[in-house]
Each structure stands twice: as C-alpha cells, then as structure tokens.
Length: 179
Image (tube, rainbow, N blue to C red; front, side):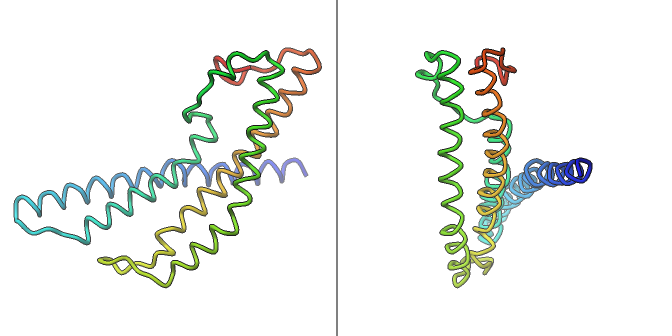
C-alpha cells in the first residue's frame, strides 16, 4: 500500500514539476518570441499584428497562473512578518497552522464559483484569435487546485511542527528565520 501511495505521489510531483516549471518556461518563450515578432512587424514593416499581441498577452496570463502555485509550494512568496517575528515559537506554530487553514478553506470555497465563471465565459471569444474565454480562464482552475494541494501538504507539515513545539521537542527548521 505504501509503495502505491509513493508511486502516486511521485507521479503527482512529476506532473506538477512539468506544469509549474516547464510549461511556464514554454509560455515565456512564446511570449518573448511573440513580442519580438510584434515589435519587428510594427516598427520595421509598419504592420501591427494584433493576433500576435493578443497571443503574447494570453501567454503571459497562462505563464503567471501555471507558475504561481510553485511559490506556494516552496513558500517563496512575499510575507509581512513584523508581528510573526515578535511571537514566541508556540505562537508562530499556531499562527502558521491557523493562517494556512483559513487560506485553505477560502480556496476550497472558491472552487465552485470559479468553475461556474470559467464555464460561463465560454459564450464569448477573444477579439482577434477568436479563442473561447473558457480556455483563457481555465488555467485559473489549475492554479486553484494546485495551490489547494500545496496548502494541504503545508498544513499537515505545520501541524506536525506545532505538535513538536507544544510537546517541548525542538522543531525541524523550515527555513531560516522561521521555526
């Protein structure tokens, strides 16, 4: 049973690495290439290409939405820790768990309305590429689900750290400056 769970976890991790690292890199290449092509056509040939411009705007949106969960997983996002740094270890441990649980609950609540919005926008299309807005906004669902997955893992880890702190054991250091 454990080996099956490890295989599933490994498959999920490999998929997330592709979706959170490699796919945004591909979108970045498309964005940069489209930007160079648009600039060349606009200023060298005085021929603006609206479809290319719309394409690199879409590539930027997708790049941001596919890569954002990576910051959650690695806890590399911006944090305001003025009050957090003033707390003792027990307060930090509780604050970590409570904050992540609140965020997790809010993200789970967002699933249904986000899905309904993504589906609703299928009736409209982008002006130049004639692409359905459902495809344009669908990466938000990936962002939402991947962030929920990462938050669940972080909540489980932080509960373990909180139990260590309350039992008087030295907690495993998460990052410099944190527990």
